Length: 174
Image (cartoon, rainbow, N blue to C red; front, side, top):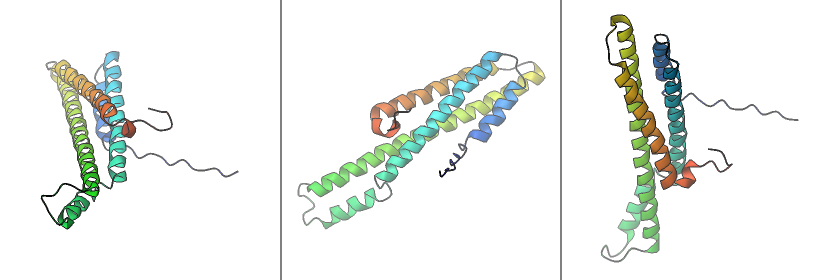
């Protein structure tokens, strides 16, 4: 029997920032609901990371890096630029447009993740400051962070609706 070593998934790029902020926050609060809320944010970030990988995979499968070039070459090859598009050009144009939609979704997702991490770090800074000064607006930052988690979950739902093949695991998971 041959045993295969399971490849360890690399840590998401945001993991260290998240863990540092969570450590700062949890060291300064006794409120158990904060840990639950941070876990919800972490789950949303993990889901976003999975969605990102699915989008990148779909873009790669469609030849995203060459879709525009192939369309340009086909458009230049046609003898009459005013003629109706050939089936080849129609197909290349559709592929290019699909790639662009996927790339736009990827950019939107990356921006949402960046905003979530920024809000998390702002919340952590506010918690640290409040623990020292006794004054602060940590609750407002926590509410903003919950809004970010909701936005990430909404982005996931939107991606599932727009690109069901991309975001669903063909083995039945997710």
